[in-house]
Length: 403
Image 1: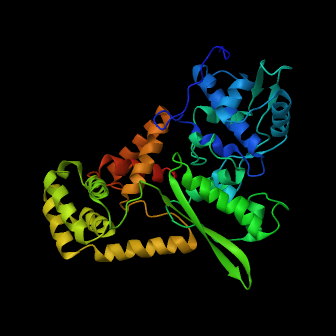
Image 2: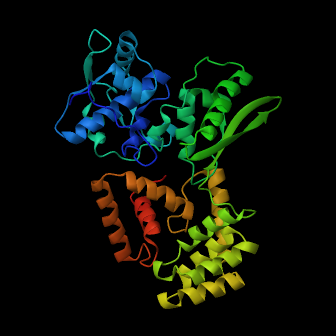
Image 3: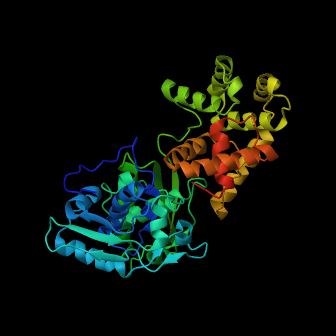
């Protein structure tokens, strides 16, 4: 592969590289330069590995690494970064970073390097086998998007972005003490005064995450007092533009919500008549009201041909009110205790998120998801008449993928 004469493909929302989940190979103890370097090197290696799956030694140069990461590396600085990475372990499972499961580790992030003596020269590098295997067949280790590598200027923003994104199905993270946050983010003695800690870590991460158009989540946090001092902190998290509001929207937003609700119906009954029906009820109820009655119709209606008339009656008399209460209770419980939402619950926002992840997966991974979906439909675990997007999301969750 000729590097010097090749213009690197840049990453856009449409072409974002499907291996972006490998950003999770950063450790929260890494410096920002180290985190960005290993991310960029894995991206460059994955392009070479895709062209030659037998390749073990990868090559690049300073200009490429600087362009991918947005950091201007020089010979001495990159050499120091690579040397540091060779001596640091990596946590592969992003859930393990939250101290909930056992950690899966490789010996180090970078196995071998041979960097040239001048800034313009190519250099070679290798990854341990456990990491190299993920270049073509990655698992869902994190949800950080590779597009954010250039924009984020704090390693704590990376860490908080990844941490909060894993709670998108819950809406709120667990409560951590300030000392717990210090250990989690590997802060050491940095920012000993809380006002400095908040300004340089939590508020900076919040502003960077919320202000970055390439990041799909919006976060906030609440401070919890212990006497006169701040003793703990908790983040809330939701999707940005894709979050379905429950009311008070303009006509364009209302139309998008109606389209999302219509997409929850069996494909054969996604008609203009049912769209008008949902639009009428959305004018004086909420999104949650409509979703609960749609789900109730799936659970109670035994004949596909009767789905539309059954739904109309359910919406009229709010047959799904008990189901709506159960869903709200589940959501509150998850906010307090953590955990995942029920796979069988309808969730138009989750369908969109999982649809994007499915599109970025390798063909092998997509085939595995399709086969799981077929098995679950055959056994009745996944309803046959659900729209494809919902069945795909539920199949992924049955495989243990929680986004």
